[in-house]
Length: 147
Image 1 (cartoon, rainbow, N blue to C red):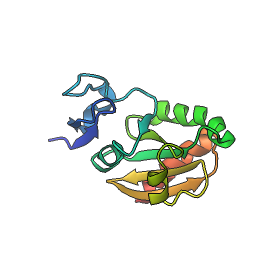
Image 2: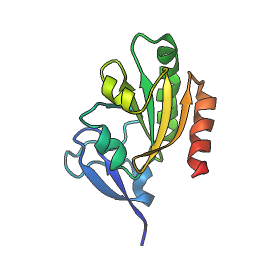
Image 3: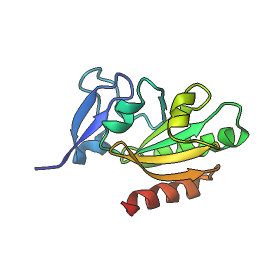
Image 4: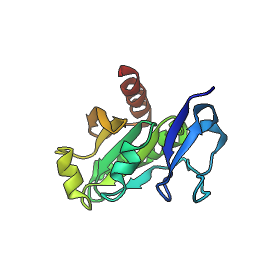
């Protein structure tokens, strides 16, 4: 019997149970029928953060950013590319700290961009500053191998 994972739909936030072996088969949500993985980061808000990060069995890499931040904007293409390459083993998400100031304060975000890796709702790694694609992918992989 294969291990099953809980995967939260980025569209309707339904929690889907999916055999781990089927992650790479482009699965759809059982509720809204949309793709569970799009190859692009999802947008996190105060309304969906707990469900997306806390209910997912997949690790979630969160980019805490702001639209006025030059380094955030310069790292955005590398973050999107890393998402396209590492999904579905890892979920990538962006949280606009300008719009979600309480969440940014809750996680003690003092500089942006700040990246954080969450597993089972708990932060397991953090990195401040913009990263290029290869450094970002290596950091994500190293962060996941630490635990």
